Image (cartoon, rainbow, N blue to C red; front, side, top):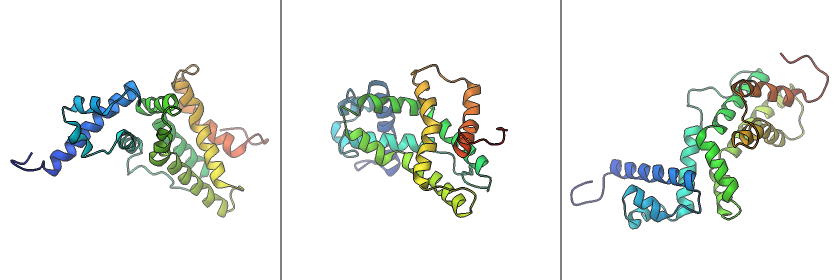
Length: 212
């Protein structure tokens, strides 16, 4: 803190991170409804007035927490996402990255929170739709499929619909089982999952060459 003045930019940023750290732990441990602004302020040892200088209300705080979790789950900038022309290899790479992020402890805890409390707090679903990575992933996948379609290598009526279904195929069952809604998948099952999903997505139920 600057003597006799406002905190420095660095100190302000550090305080913001401390607030998000505390809020993340409280939200994911106790849920949205049971977490109060007062509890967050007490955890960080700040006044509610100081808190409100940074976040206008609890949904805004949750949006910031969600944004930071998703940012940290994204692949590092140097990791190639859509390079190359082999669609099967490209989709397997995307599926592996998406699955890894979806099954991280924070992602599972966040998904459990949304499922448990979105009915009581409809704004949570709105925040998730606005801050979540789902639409970003769908846009990326749809763009890949559009490229392949324009090159004449695949035929689709709706690339966005296909991307949505692909994302569900990758995430839904492993995430459900990671939440103990069924036996958790083994390491071997998870390692094979992207390849199996991509094969089914590209070939469906048609008679085709054996899966390599």
